[in-house]
Image (tube, rainbow, N blue to C red):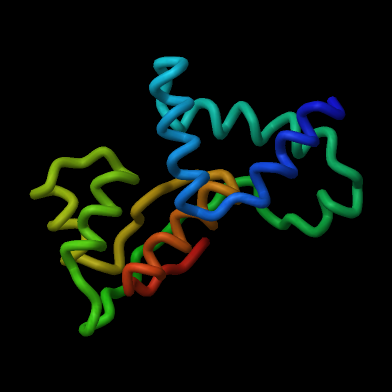
Length: 130
């Protein structure tokens, strides 16, 4: 368990872009999608966490809601991020962005939800975690 905690601490030190690259490498290496490894990895961490840490984390999963797109933001960049997150085609991702407020990801782990939120906010989107 100590080895897993060490790995987790190293991942926490990475930037969002580095974590995204790591996820892509893990997907390619093991032939899996990000949804399954994140859900499996989140469960042991939460189960082994101290009671104080568990109390601090309110929810086990979040829905990431795209509320709006900043008028000065590049909508193309946001569409690309939504396409990457959802696995939708370009047309469907564009439709999702244009129909905001809309859920981009449902039942995401807290870490995944925060990563998605950071990516979208950086691109100029208004995002809410529910």
